[in-house]
Image 1 (cartoon, rainbow, N blue to C red):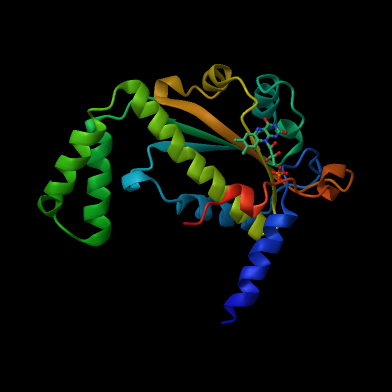
Image 2 (cartoon, rainbow, N blue to C red):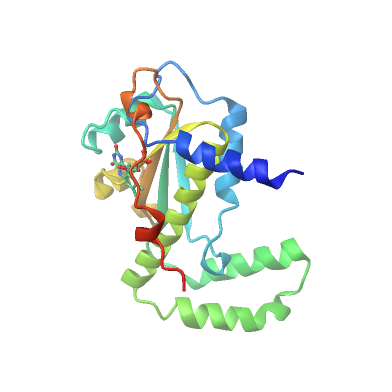
Length: 216
Ligand SMILES: Cc1cc2nc3c(=O)[nH]c(=O)nc-3n(C[C@H](O)[C@H](O)[C@H](O)COP(=O)(O)O)c2cc1C
């Protein structure tokens, strides 16, 4: 395998991607592309591996219209093919940690007793957070998943726009997140760019390496 070429492609794809302003309204995400994104995001890293969030993927036109109204009328909400809404747990319960430990035991074919040390550590740490600390911590994890979605989308040449410009409490209401112990943190609209979106031709504006990095 020629790693050098792969790396070049990866960086080229990161240059190709941009926060899409105008999507091609007529193009729906292919099932294959959707599945590639779902699997990429599912594989996101998270602190302790707990993944204290769920992700809503919205294709339904009526729901997207409502979400657009709650997102300062940004057209990407209805013009894109799918809207990804990342929603972290409002409160992390003991049962959530137990469910995670059960999953480890099942996946790796080990007994729950063998995970006792991990169980104590996770419960002591996470359950001692205030609800606000849990929410902030959970929201941070969703941004890792968002970053993964953006990089994966670029790799597969799918377009996306990460977005914080939305009313989080209205989104929670529309998607009935409160009753599911969830709250929306960040969203991404996903689909394929319109040829008319001039933003795609603009050069990337980023800090230079010397401004960004301190290498000691
Ligand atoms: C967390 C986050 C929130 C953002 N919110 C919005 C938004 O609400 N609407 C929008 O059009 N772009 C939004 N953007 C896009 C940024 O403006 C864009 O990523 C940035 O200017 C860099 O440009 P590029 O992604 O095209 O390379 C957001 C980006 C991030 C990462």
